[in-house]
Image (tube, rainbow, N blue to C red):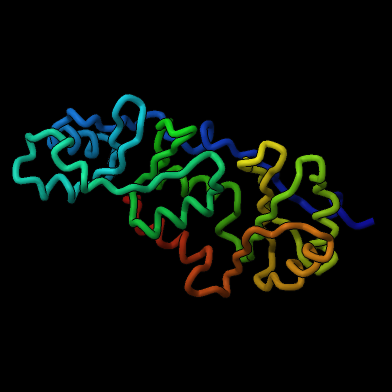
Length: 233
């Protein structure tokens, strides 16, 4: 029969805290001077830094914010009103993170858990995740499903995909804000996803997002290309 034995796929279980958060990027403190923050940015090769006080994220400071200070020797707490209020949690998947990074033109994005700052995700780590787990170099679309953990069946999902003359190139499982649920991301070898999406819906799957490469304004390739422009490689 068709199914899991007739396809080749890779299943990755992604934990942001383990896979994406940069452990070598230190946040700025409100008592740090603008010059100290600039030195940290230069060291970490980023243009933004989280500003943290007593474990709480206050926001993101940018290189431009510091250049606009009349005196870069002043502490960051003198320009707290300029901090950008943007962050992600463990529940955000890679694609949601990419979208936020692109929308706000960031070089990194902070991660918060239970209102506590836990680290930052750099553009470089996002790109590596995209390249490795979603086979970005190959053509095709992406479907993101959410389901109860007990309902997870890769063989059934493979049968649905192959029933529409498509193949799963790669897949990964990620966290959901509901501990009983998971998100499953499937990278397929076809650009036209409508037939596959409709079949998943007939089987009562919940589709949270889908991206095909024919989408010119919000397509996955556009997001990938935007990230590439950020990197000095």
